[in-house]
Length: 167
Image (tube, rainbow, N blue to C red; front, side, top):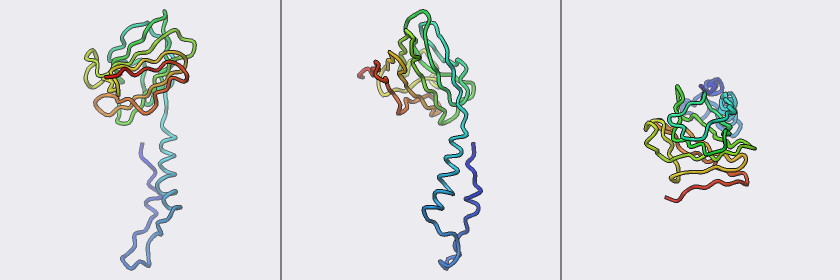
């Protein structure tokens, strides 16, 4: 999604005399850079998927990922959901997938670092070999860097178990 260039195009360059051109101040930074950027980010669509998955490995997984996606996961029957990679149809640089442990689910979610069962382009690059999310509303984010997905800043157990194995 392109950022609105209208405010940028309205700026006038100085002719070298320091007597013409647009004054570059906090208001111009706000209206030319920050406001259009905020609007572009706010317009990005998010897909929310609340799904129940059988325990086991999810390899090169695409449960319906479209654009930025929130995956709220539960398992049935109880057991570990183990994710080794995501494979959306058309990933794009900066795309975010947020994995959420659904409240009330008996599942444990384990995400694996660079697991060879998924294609290299779909693998997850973590700060630790494995991350386990257990309990209610644990969260971990991944961002597509092409190829592969890196663990984002958000990794929260929300008062529940979130364990990053030591290398």
